[in-house]
Amino acid sequence: MKLSAFGREVRKLRIDAGLLLATMADALGKSPSYLSSVETGRKPAGDDLVEATIKFFAKHGHDASVLRSAAKQDKKEVSIDQLHAEERNLMFALARMFPDSKSPADRERNLVRIQEALNEIEKELA
Image (tube, rainbow, N blue to C red; front, side):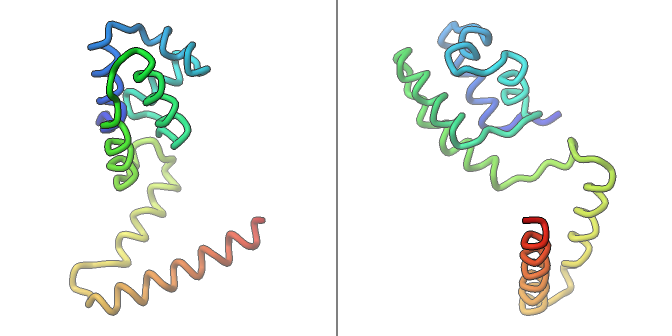
């Protein structure tokens, strides 16, 4: 499994600081298994966790501002490894809608149509 940029940086900072995963998890109010899942990229880091982690390292005298850019980088990537088969199939179907041979205008029209459809589905589910 590919480590996330955020998880890789957190693990590096934690180990360099000589801190145990359990110590950090306790201070952040998270379980060690959850924090391990974040470090290994199995779970995403939400904005609240990113900020809490930066503050945690600041209290221990370490500059962890690199974590913001790492978390931002992770948001640009989508991992399908953890998705169920049906979810992966949906992602592949969406990807096939945008072959390289289509013009930018065609791609833009498709994106607008997909966004409109998703907005309608969101309204129905609310």
